[in-house]
Amino acid sequence: MPNSNKQIVKTVCSMCYCGCGVLAHVKDGKVIKIKGDPDHPSNKGALCHTALAGIELLYHPDRLNYPMKRAGKRGEGKWQKISWDEALDNIADKLNEIKEKDGAEAISLSLGSALYS
Image (tube, rainbow, N blue to C red):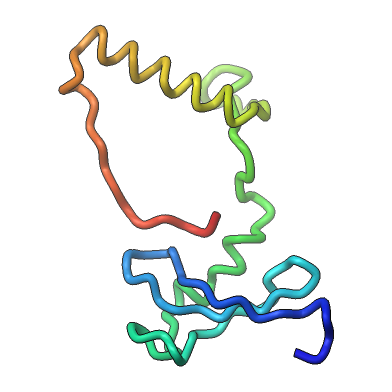
């Protein structure tokens, strides 16, 4: 790209389990366009509608970019920003409570595809 603040970054889509090759066009640290990577063995340059919507998800104004903790009663819509350390500590505490009360078998793990981080 002629302008030095623009670059193309080879990456993969994480919207589903396929991991299609993506060329992310980045300007001033922000993704401005994505295209399929024609050199990628899996998708050979093609991208589905979900992958193409990736920029909208990445920069959507309602996207959560940090952990939130409920600040009011359920349903009030009151939240406060907390640190990642506090969020992970809260999760660990809740999992330990469940384990102590109901046994380790009461905890299940479910995996799915990731979204952009």
